[in-house]
Length: 153
Length: 414
Image (cartoon, rainbow over all chains, first blue to last red; front, side):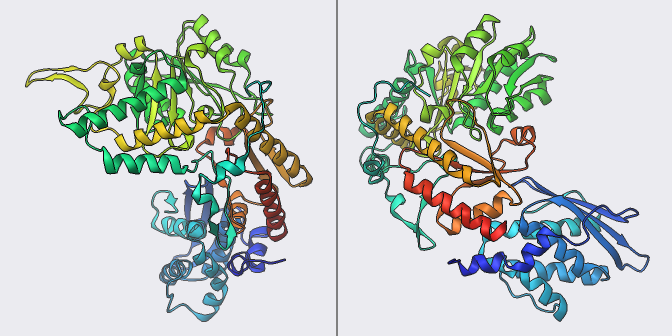
């Protein structure tokens, strides 16, 4: 089957695996932070639960929500990536991820995190889908800031 | 759909396609298959030529100057109004108000017709298949005037039951607001019957004709509908222009909408008096070039055998509906008898945006999302659907391309 390279890159096996079997899916009892995100373009919703300890380290992240393969995989990868990180590290990774999916240089990311997140880089060839990839990350940011529901815009 | 007994020759989309240059282009190296017509239709050369010729040869502001071009432009603008009158078979062109589009037409009725008549607890009857443009203006009246929205459900096949609609009408109902044709389900509302039942209870009816006017012959006198909203860009015309048909007596009794130039009789330091309809509702410089384009679009449509076009579109839909039955993972939403040429569906295990992205790379343009109809999405228990909507220039070959692209998407995502 002939397949567009950028499409193969976008829907690579690791992305589809994460979307079909997302990691850390479900509510988290005893969460210290909760954020809700909404993409008005498609109506997709995501809810992020965080447990942050007294030293500012993220000990647990889970998410709930329904969405496209890109948004589900991105949320799943995010939970893998940010668990165990300090808030400062998490913020740096969030910034790096946003650069990555927009096709911009994402420097200063730890090697293992970069390798994991590279799977999402294919989104940059699909500008209409970048919001799908960033929804969970924006929601994470708003959960940490304790602000209003995040919109992926 | 309209009776098709008189058809003499089937409609040939190939001839029409030559008028739409954009249909010849490629996307991602593949022929464009444009199936997003319910969102906006492509424009034929005749429309684009009319707009350019007018802008290059006769353009000026309307209703203002005494100079030659202003008179010429005013003539063209009013000629477009007359074209809309003919298209909808209104009694007079003073019953046609130009707007930015269908949305503004409905907002105009909400603000100028209904808002002054609404008291807290009064009701507006509308169906769950409405587009947000025929929901949000009524929510405004709920928020601002205490109006109550009464929702009429559709059947599981998407059909709209007149009895259910009538049952929602009560002594406090002030308006029935209903889509002539659903932009998601393709359901065509039995408008004439709805109007008759509502009028028997003394309730006026607004029809959102943004989809319906494209595919159905509309005769507002025969329907006896009080208001009928259309938009130009779905009728193969330009964006930025639509129209509201309103019965003369209603329009005359309505307060102004926007304030500004054109819509006044006299302005002093103390008071202002207003122009008669339709000028009363057309503050500011109107979309003049777009009006000329709209007239050209209506002329284009009217020159075709519209029954044959409707039969062609029905055939495309029926062929597509039949073709996707082979996909056991696909659930079509909206199977009402006599529905318009829109195929909406949910795909098991595949999100509409993922599906649409893959279809797009095959050159197939469809809409994915909630289609500005979130109440309807909730009714059918979905967040979003994928929608293929057909126009006069689509072909069975394009349906085949859609089906092949769907099979491919399922291989990737399923």
